[in-house]
Image (cartoon, rainbow, N blue to C red; front, top):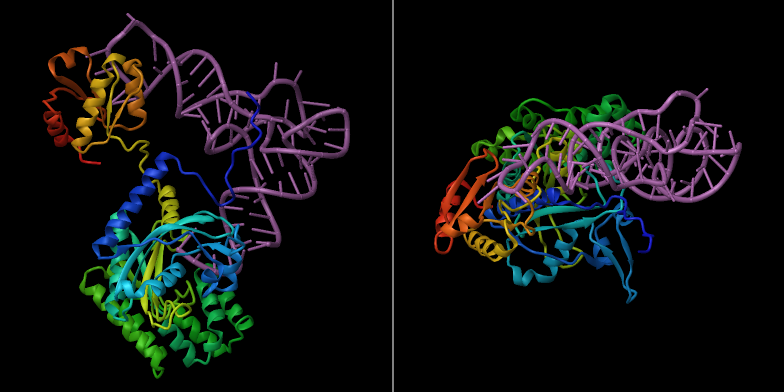
Length: 446
RNA sequence: GUGGCUGUAGCUCAAUUGGUUAGAGCGUUGGAUUGUGGCUCCAAAGGUUGUGGGUUCGAUUCCCAUCAGCCACCCCA
């Protein structure tokens, strides 16, 4: 044997997933898929690699800097997608005649960003996007929030907060106070409010954004609005009064919140005038979702409305709204919160291997059970039963089936339930149907 | 990309002012009169102390570089 010369390791910000983690990831993906489909979103996929010019179209210098890009063997300048929205824009522009509007799609896929990794932030991570394209109806805005709520509930969270705001409110407000040209700097500053406090932020507003004292007061007032939704809405209406855009934004925000009240989900929704982050192309409703138990990990599901998704690719005006669940960030939070089950196998039932010569029987038994809807594994070696039970226990199987010579003789098997140590002798039946029926009574399908 | 903190077995941590063969718990594997797991007991495997250089008689310990993790900036899921 030659000595190994390569150290096994993964790239910075990239990771391996072991079975216990992967089972949870797949379960989350299944949940997201189910919730999206329940609202009529249809699946799509696009290539991981795109032409650099396609990906950079709408991006800022920042996204260019974070993008993995290179020249391929044909000397084409290509890049790995860093989100699913830009590929969607290209996709819709390219296929709009086949799609029909409004078009609702979901896209669950990996994206890459070459930025500094931190807790819950990786260079390769999975996003679960859903978007509604081709309508400006507020119905879709409302629905987007409902999807987020259903999604987090389905995943198992009950303590979370969907924070909503509206870019029109922000822009109208800034316009009214003569700050339209400095919106980015102002929004960036107020975003730091919870972290840095009033003092630091007002200094930044004065020094970086060059605001007058009365402008600073107005901005801080707006960003710090608290209390019940009605109060906040009322104050926002006052603060934007006289500005057409701002008034429209307030009206949209009010309609949105009213809908959530009628639907009984308003306790999970908070109007937060300070949320302004996210991509620059948002023009209306914006969403950010924080877990009550782990707010510091950041938003796990963000999105918003945009006026024109694909202007760089087509003359068609394509308004839309959507949001993205950050699967890996959510998973990181769930791990910290110890919400993840420790399963190491997707199988529920282990068929013990008693004698090598009976292996065909075990395989047939397993096949019958699989037809009955269970995930079943046959232990490969005729090891001591104790070792096989230990294996089943460690891997968190739910039941072990023992079919030794005696049982095979009588057409029966021993089923031992690992959770409560009970054991029963069950008739298998001609095609295993009696055993399947017995197991169904105690086991859910996987 | 910039700055800070950290880096010992798969995981969590030990190792007397730099001093011999770097330890423990958990985990993994095997065993405790060969048809039954969790508890207990025994044993084994697993580390050129992230990697590479330097200082020194001697480095896990001090210095430099590099890689990785975490934190802040930035940005964002």
